[in-house]
Image (tube, rainbow over all chains, first blue to last red; front, side, top):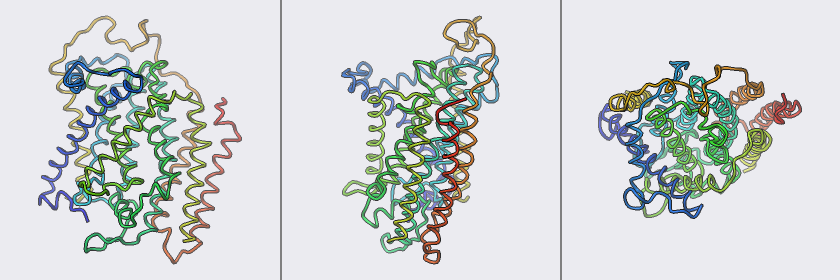
Length: 343
Length: 120
């Protein structure tokens, strides 16, 4: 079993402090790196150079942007719903920190050990919807409200295929291994534990994408929609809604939304890595390296998709979810259940 | 401190950090206030009325179907954890099948009512 930080350091307080430092470092690096990567990938796809001026090949561009955002005035419009408007960035930001701390980075250590990892990750993911709606409603701005309404409808709809495809993996995990052997100890498998999901894949020498290809594809599409990425970026469709739900947020408040969004992308990719791509397993390199290599490969695919496909219309988007994604995921779950009983 | 308490600590400190990030611009940023600074943005013209107006009922319908679905899917998580218990045998599959069939009726009903064609 992976040791928790509290066991390694001897004190829970120290563990939270260390873990928090690690998580914040990872998420900050992720936000800076992903914005840079996004701009570079979009530039390459459109045969441009992308940012080139600040630092080597523009590498410090996002740092410069960050400093600029820090110095920007926080404009609070009048006529807003004050509590909702001010709380919204925090509601998007805080769950991301807790959600990241649940991830199964490595087989040898864990930030803390929680058996309900998968359910809690989805719970913290759900907070983002709440924050977006608070922002949209609290701003008293027509664009923001429209963006938020669309975003909520989209997020709650795509939540269902997300959960159903994850559910088929949970079913598979519990059924494939009642116990797994790690080193010289035997662990009773608990299907909602992210570490156990990875261990079963390592133990059986198979990635779940091989056994659950349909679920993997559905999960990835649902993650795209959950994080409001193109081709599902209707909530902030800039050509029709200015900036969607964060139209009225300036400077650092806007940065918090952006931070939350990129962190949610990373969390989505990390969960997909754990569920379908064998988590930290891989030859030669240490576990965490493999884990992040796989996660960022998925992230690059997300960006590739964004700059390749046009945006869907809103009714097409909802119809695609309810008439294609959800029926497919239900059928997939039933087929999984059937074959688990046959074998 | 148990593992769950640690998780709550992460959440709480997350809120504090988010708040701290807002203190810096509060200290260093300019504080300009003009006639139009505090108006909500509407592509340059003066703001007309409030944004809290009526919107399409379809959003509400989607929310309703979602609630029905999401709660039922959550019920399936504990089921998935014991699905392969040898004592249950094929009965487990039959029960999951019946459950999901009834659940699918919700989609079929909404489909026939034209919710997905975005009719109002």
